[in-house]
Structure formats: C-alpha cells, structure tokens
Image 1 (spheres, protein in one colour):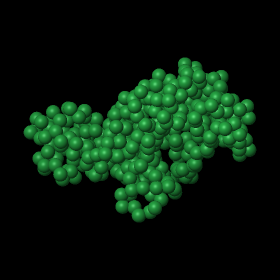
Image 2 (cartoon, rainbow, N blue to C red):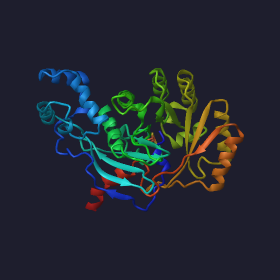
Image 3 (cartoon, helix red, strand yellow):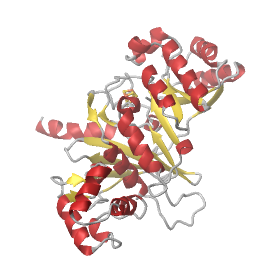
Image 4 (cartoon, protein in one colour):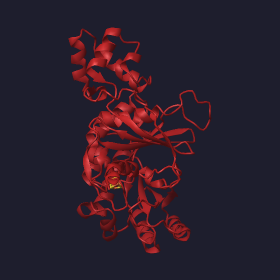
Length: 386
Ligand code: SF4
C-alpha cells in the first residue's frame, strides 16, 4: 500500500533526535509482552493466583487508557499481583531506539521488537487530530519499486500486540493536558500505512484494531481508521465481509496494467480490473467511499494520457483520488513531478468528474519516508565495517 510517510519528503535537514526511553522496561525481553497473551491464557494465569478474570481487563485498561508503563504503576491491582506480573510478563515487548521530531510536531519512532527486528511508526498532529501511522509487517513482500520498506522483502507479520504497542507508544507522545486548540489530547485517528501490506496480516490487524476501538482501550472509532492496501482482491472482500466501517485506501499508482506491473509487481497476479471490482464490493458492502492513492512519479505516471485513463477508470465510481507527489528516496532514481505536470493532472481529473486532492506534507524536516530510518539503522553496522 502507499504509506502515508511517502507523502513526507525525505528532507535532508535532520530532525531533532530524542533518545527517550519511552518504555523503560528494556531488560525484560525474555518475558512475554502481556498484550500478546491471549485473554483466556491470562485469565487462567490469574485464576491460578486466585485472582478474578476482571484483573485482565484492569491491566489492559491501565496500559491503554491510563498510560501506565510498568505493572508497579497499576495501583488499582493488589501489590502481590503487581509483583507477580512483573516477574512473569513485561508490559511491552517493543523499545524505542530512535525518536525524531519535526518542527511541525510530527514524530517518527524507530522501534525494536522483542526479537530485535526494527519497524517504524509515525504520529502526525494537526487540526486537533492526532493520527498514528502504524506498520503491520517487518519489511514488505510487495516490492513496489519506489518504496524503501520493500527493498529487502518481508521478514514476518507483526503480532496484534506489536501493532497495539505502536499505538500506545505514539499515543504516549500526545499531551493529555494540552490546552492548544490545534492539538488533540489523545490519539484520534489511525492510518495503517506504515511498513508492510496490512491485508497480508489481516487477522492480527483486525484484532489490534478491535483493541484500539474498545472504549476501555484507546476508544478510536472504526470510521477514524484507514487501511491502505496495494490491492489484494480476495483480502479486500474478506475485509468487506468483516462488517466493519474502516476506510479503505487502494494504492493504484497507475491507470493501466502495463504500467502498474512495472511499478507494483504484485499487479501481475491481480490486475487492475479485479482490484477495482473488489473495491466496488467494499463500497457496496460497507457504504464507505474508497480512496485511491496515486504516488506521482515525474514523467512516469503523470502525463496527460495517464490522467485521462484514470478518469476512464474512476469517473463512474464513488471514488476519491489522493495524489502523493514523489519525494526522493536514497538509492532510487524517480523524480518529483513538475508543478505544471501535477497541475495538469489534477485539472484533467477534476474536469473528468473525479474528486482529487494532493496530500499535505507533514514532517518535512525529518527523514520520514517510510522504511528509510530502519534501512539506515540496519545498514549502519555494515557500513562501519567497510
Ligand atoms: S512495498 Fe509494501 S510497504 Fe512499500 S508501498 Fe508497496 S505495499 Fe506498501
């Protein structure tokens, strides 16, 4: 899918790096992260200690709603249970290893998972919204030619707990006591546009979003969640049948199969007609308008004929197009579109009756294009050996 951070220029002016240990319990990697313990297992563990099942809910509420970062802080639990939890579990399996903050209050985190793998997530704050952009896989197997996340393939799916932990990490960056009108005191929106193809990890994602939506959790309603996909038709239909109200964004990036096969290699297996048919099914089933993401690559997919083809594809659909002008990624040779080409593209879409907007830039002064931070961190040891 198209990661939201792709909309963020890979600015070379470094953002402020904060080495904040947002989650202090880093020595606990051998213990299991409690958000990945199935509810029934946790209840059984509690029953062994003569504790009622509602304690499981209390623990979860403490982490998700009360911003606790250690079992010792959960003062609504008996002291003995807090000690027991500390001995057997860790509140989080993830650790923040790098924290970049931009001048516009966009935060980017490089996160180390319990097995040492690295992922990224981003907090974007504007218009009293606080939006978390989260990853669903370590790396990505889709291989889109313009994306740093997919350069080394996919290592594994994230667990539901690892997805929820990203949300908590980002939520903990919001200021619960803010009095600024343009700042939300908590997370308000989620975009699943980070590293990985969300629909390739659909079950864990749905479990994580259920936790996020719980009123005792983060309380983020389904209509405030956007799931972005490269376009896996069978999974789009499955998501539609899940009877949820999530917003679907399909990363199209090209108006014909010949061009899309070159930009998005998985298109060879799917093809645009099947993706659009699945997206139509999503709209018919959920009633939610589908957004089509389109990374605009200078002189590749931004010419007048491409705009006209896109109009032909979308004008009879209740669709919305999000244009994302390309930003440079180290090691990739694509160019940003010229202002004239971009303007012409927009005008053609509008004249053809297709709703379109250009995605606003956030985090311009941090290296916020998805996958770059992780790639740099992973390559550092190699480079230092050279
Ligand atoms: S390679 Fe994966 S993460 Fe990157 S744009 Fe494609 S689907 Fe998204």
